[in-house]
Image (cartoon, rainbow, N blue to C red; front, side):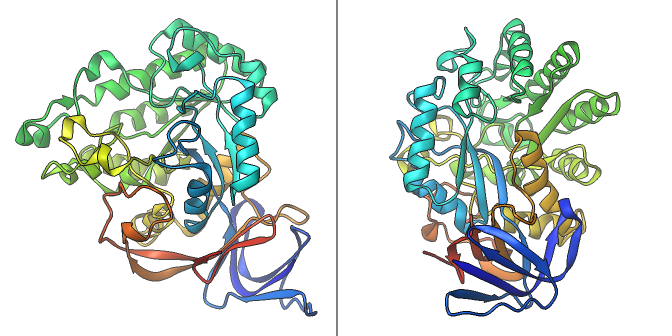
Length: 430
């Protein structure tokens, strides 16, 4: 298929494009980007992007597709369709499946299934330890050669510091990033939400912010000792932001991400025992939210990821302390970024795309995240000013666990193009 995107405002941070340009796509590749392109022929689709932004497809380096093993929550087909609607053209899925993605066979399964039924690019993340048990390193070389883009025990911290040190040493040899879930379980105890006024008010056991800060500090020390890079997942506390800021200033090879819920919500969202707002790390205080925003603004926080974590309604519609952690994120992430960061002047649109396209591609070593000539045509067309009301019942995901139902947000995805194939056309998933 040939596609000509006309009259759009192209923003491509990596190639420093920020202008009204046309894009011509042929055989799945971007062939030309220039003003007033003129291609004709009956087999060409012309997309009029007047008044809209044309940007690289988003990259989510932290999500959960639940397959294999938990297909009742989500599967690769439904998850990738949800991602496409949200403007994501490449996603990296975490290994806490059943069986765990800790060997070549499961990596191959995910890649094959994604190729057969997925509508966006899927990159598996392998486990750091066998079975996510934190006892013995997985075969990291085998995982790397099978095609994982990183390793992580996400959902479970590697509590054994010696084991984490060895993981960093091994992954450094294979040029594979470690994504660390920073949580000291001895400080978490049986806490279920952020420790503070709201936990006291609701009579729920709290989780101290130190549980995150202590492990962030430990992993930065281990990164410094080994010389290996570390990527800190879902940063949520002011303390963690400050620790990472200082580490970067002295040259430690640390990168990090946060998620939209950590710059848009506080633990007040839990009021009424709202399990849709139960996640791990938990929602924090206004002070933490402001610190996360400042970290995004000054570059301390490199990436915005979704931590898309679908759960069946039966796993959320229970007592708060028994409810599963996590929310779905693909279909609201871009709009939350535009509404809470771009429209408020914290980030420019180019800076938001740097954190949702360029930086995740760089960290994972993907040839994605930009609109380069002769590169795969992963492109989205968005209206950053169009408002809509979030309706969880219209999500493409199998799950509905989102605290944003009824929110008015700005930013809609009109077209999602993956490898030159139109997946979403005029806001409709094909």
